[in-house]
Length: 65
Image 1 (cartoon, rainbow, N blue to C red):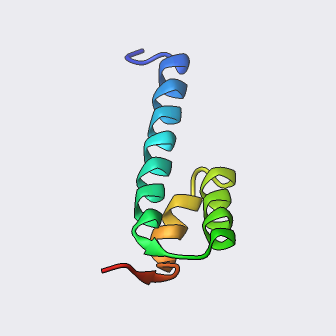
Image 2 (cartoon, rainbow, N blue to C red):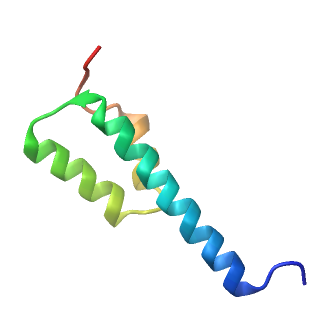
Image 3 (cartoon, helix red, strand yellow):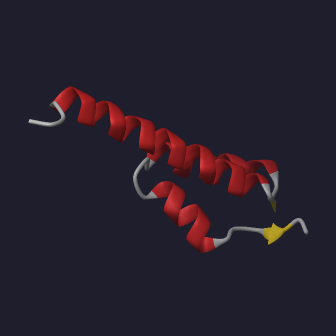
């Protein structure tokens, strides 16, 4: 086997962390109140597979630019 289950699990965790970081940087570029930031941040953390994608697709708040 090319990759063991442990390596695959490690790579999956690394990818999930990277996706969450990218979603957090996207969220940083939007203007929100503190409770809104906390709510969307909780979505990113609590739903690690679809949360970051939802944050980017929904476009919460208005753009700062």
